[in-house]
Length: 201
Image 1 (tube, one colour):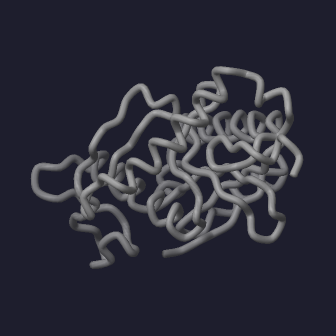
Image 2: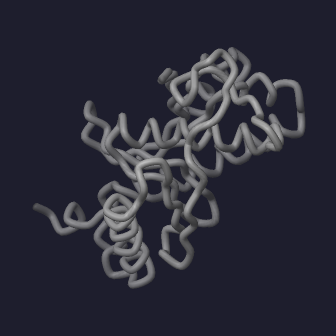
């Protein structure tokens, strides 16, 4: 086995041997992996722990339960604020539920950061065998984004940057959406060469 295949970062193999000798990246990779193992061993069944990739900060998050439109719970529907909860907080909680769903379905790792950008997860693509970083979008994200030109512009900019960062590392990147992606946005993703897919829960 080549040495670059023996270590992972963000749940995927390093792209080149130079990264193995970068102490900062090696420490991050170890902390990220150890954090994931400890999280699985110590968390309560109805909570989750969210840690920074460098292991410097972890937070216990609220239970992944709540009221969602359509009676779908965490398995579908759209976010709906419960008693005393803002719509933004409900959407954030719902989005995190989708990220957890993808972690379990794809068998990869969760949220991590690289070059100042947050990625929603990483996994090994069963078809290509390559490491893949992804962005998860759920609920009414795309519909709301299309209504706000500033938000749409920010989405385009951020996704272009993340795609570039993954490419620099030699890792695949894709956008995964719980709901169909509107044609305007899917056309933009296609034009930029950013793979995308719809993965409903």
